[in-house]
Amino acid sequence: MSSEYLAVSGGLAFATTFVLVRWLIRSLRGSTVVGVDIHKPHQPRIAEMGGAAVLVGFYLGVSFLAIFASDAIPASVYNAALLAILGAGFVGIMDDLFAIPKRYKAIFPFVFSLPLGLVVFLRGETFLLGADAGVLMVVLVPFGITSAANAANMLEGFNGLGAGLGIIMTASLIILSSLLRAGEGLFLLVPLLGALLAFLWYNRYPARVFPGDSMTLSVGATLACAAITSQPSFKMYGLLLFLPMIAEFFLKARGGFRGENYGTLGPDGRLTHRGRIESLAHLVMHAGRYKEWQVVTILWALEAAIAATLLVGVSSLGPP
Image 1 (cartoon, rainbow, N blue to C red):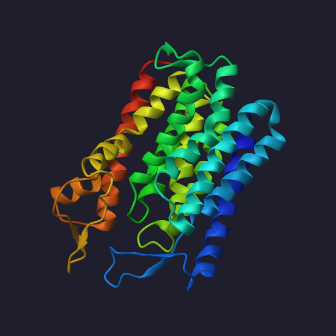
Image 2: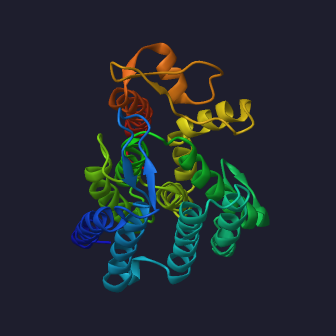
């Protein structure tokens, strides 16, 4: 797949998302599709469901590649991966609008991902972490996508956090694609990067729009699909990039997944947390008194450190 087509795809995703988010902010003002920014002194009401714009921008970017670079994307992989990603996004939109039960965020992404599991198995790509999983790939793939989608959804709650983490992870996988000469997942990663960069412009501190589950679930699903549809080593690298989210899962499990990431805003604009530590954000707030943007920067730095370590390790091995 030529770099020119990829650049156009990423640019199209960026431009579309940028325009749509701006429109959403205006259109949702005064509606019920808003959230309270609790880490601000006056707790302003902010437009929710900005992830819908990310989904549209991403889809247009991927569609451009499917039209003009179709020879590089097997139709079965394209269709099955998009079903898994857009399905996760649809579940997120439903949750943003109607606050659906949590179990649905596990059941439906799994169902939407089953076709990709079947495609992976039929293509003979059954090796997982050095072992041949065989027919189990049919269910392991949707399990991995569902886990990634919900893991990305757990580590949120601060201006720009989820979008920034997604950008770091996506950019890392794109660089890994170059290092390993494995471009199979680029048709997903490049449009995702363009859409997230545009969204972060509006979602960075102080946010003018929230992502909602429509973005967090679909971003996790996209990263998982990109890793799954690439060469076998990508699955392990993708898993390593999700280490903060995996840690978040176990911290949340301590409280039966009832805890939130939020802190208490002090008069000096700094956040504190007292009580059980059920999030990486809680750990940061226990380590010092930080403002919201500083908490986000620390968590970004954690993800960036993991990504940098991974990239240095892979590059030291030399080309495959």
